[in-house]
Length: 105
Image 1: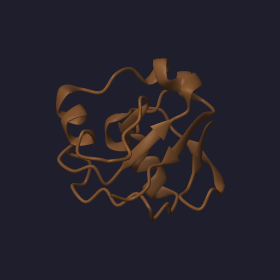
Image 2: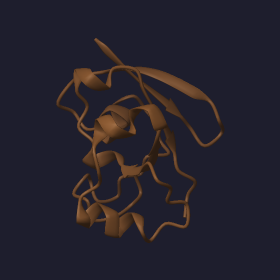
Image 3: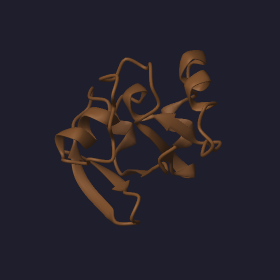
Image 4: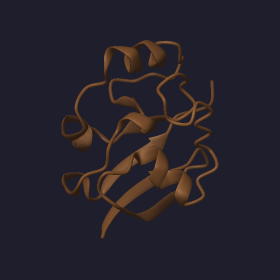
């Protein structure tokens, strides 16, 4: 099985098993990452699953959609590799991906 590495807001790194075809949001929630609120349930209508993708994986996850980008624009913590975890589908190509949970807005 593949791995997702999450850095929480306290700076702790959590390594978790990840299965292809699930969103990063689902993987994190299934593994008890409480900082991923995902209030909209993964429908890309809030930004409570804002994450920052490690630079070396940014090209592999691809760009944000226009709707996702609009939501991220509302965050004062948006960076060049910001994404919503509900919009990134895990694949075997992302094995070992590192993400950081964005500060709360």
